[in-house]
Length: 191
Image (cartoon, rainbow, N blue to C red; front, side, top):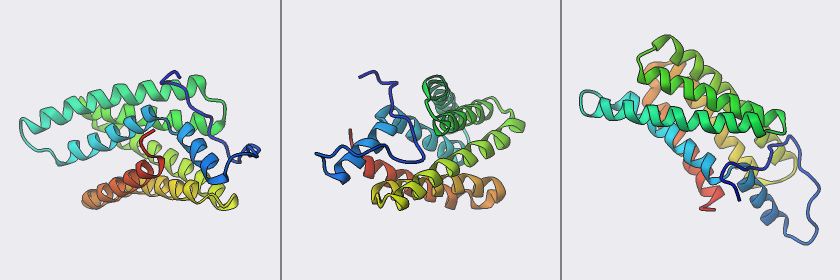
């Protein structure tokens, strides 16, 4: 399988495969929508956010800048992939969210402060929308794993928004984002 492939995100499910257990099928679908490359980019994005706000003085600020550049490139690559190969509106929202984070981390690395907050706000909105879509679909279809994944996505987007609205709460917001990411990563597993 090509590492850039993914299953399209949808507002509602496709017909179930009759011979498989519903939970197993649902988990396979979630993993296909969130492939390992996508989850790796998510880890980079969170790591860069924490590093850029917590690092002070050399060599840590230089390392955070380097991580920000790497994250910007990885997020841009995944965002372009989602836009180019996306089959649904939710795929495009995800692509825009990653491109916004790419812009935020790239701008942060080069001290372009006027770009960081608007790009981060756009990414936050995209994350809340995607998480909300998964949460609603999970509740509607009684798919608990999807509902938890969606709730974690909403929490992640809300955490980023909180840090933009109340910069003094950034540490708390980052802790919530870590919980969100850990929840999604543990649900999706190592595949």
